[in-house]
Length: 150
Image 1 (tube, rainbow, N blue to C red):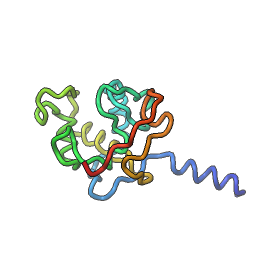
Image 2 (cartoon, helix red, strand yellow):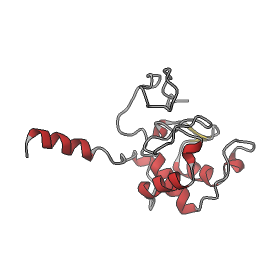
Image 3 (cartoon, rainbow, N blue to C red):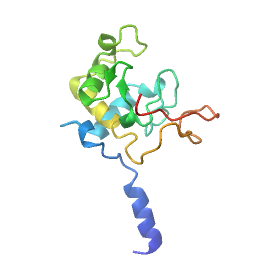
């Protein structure tokens, strides 16, 4: 295989979801199914979600670098069991939140959480680094990346 083909193979190998760190892995959950749940339930109507076509809305917080976030729903530490609970019933965790209940099953919430935990694992980016063009939705002006320690 020539150098160009090797480079192309390396690029294509990196196109799939990244593996989350061990403390964020969810047993028996499938990020690919989670991606499908996120598409099907229209999560991109409210959130910027990397890897989800058309998910460029700023109604809710952008979900960029989710695996680096500190809190779920602004209240609970970012841990798989908390994210799954939030996805299943956000109003139980933060009454009055704009996040609606989507009626997700336990399996759907686990899979969606598994997908979200693949976001932000590929390459560490220092907190506060400016987002690049087309990284954070349709707004043209620069924005800062979320901090992982808040």
